[in-house]
Image (cartoon, rainbow, N blue to C red; front, side, top):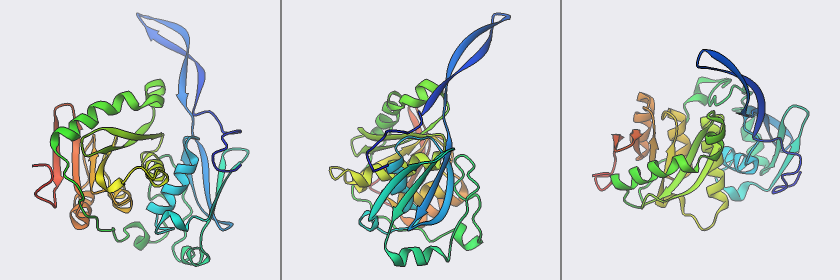
Length: 275
């Protein structure tokens, strides 16, 4: 399957029969549940990892994962991409420069494929905590803009509104206008898909906005945000201590507990940000 060709893709949600307990009795009905399936990343014919993901926006997933995992340093190094349906999932065949494949042999991962697991299966401790890319704040993000983006995000989560089972990652500009949203059963996957979408859109300068995620802010969420060149990450839940340290080291502003009318700043490298 060529990029952009969605024929043969599994649906992102499926209806299932359910029994609802209400008012002291069971009522038969139907419910939409989010789909998940194995997605294998194969670089120059060499298997690298398998993730469980929502079968949606797989091109974005391939681009974003390749960048945030350090497979490539820029989208220009992705020389080819093909999505191949398999019996139980998909294989994403990505062509990259030969030297990239050789480098992968030194840090190859065979991820077990647990939903949303960013580091499961990492074979070496050194691979788990990789150096984080420094970022530079290119614009000022005020607290009102963060609240505006947070308030707008819920209405942009179409799949979660239907199933209640997926995470979202969004990019908003400095004014707080949400421009791009991606969803997935895995929070890391949603962020990778968002990064891939940003890479593919020449009209968006990612560094001039912020990323909002509907999850906690782990080390890897910070790492992926920095890899995308974005200097502000806002999460609806708490960060981890490692995420706070990593954000400070990278020069990235980290915001947690982004809720209605409030949020907490955990790392703020630039005094001009979030006064």
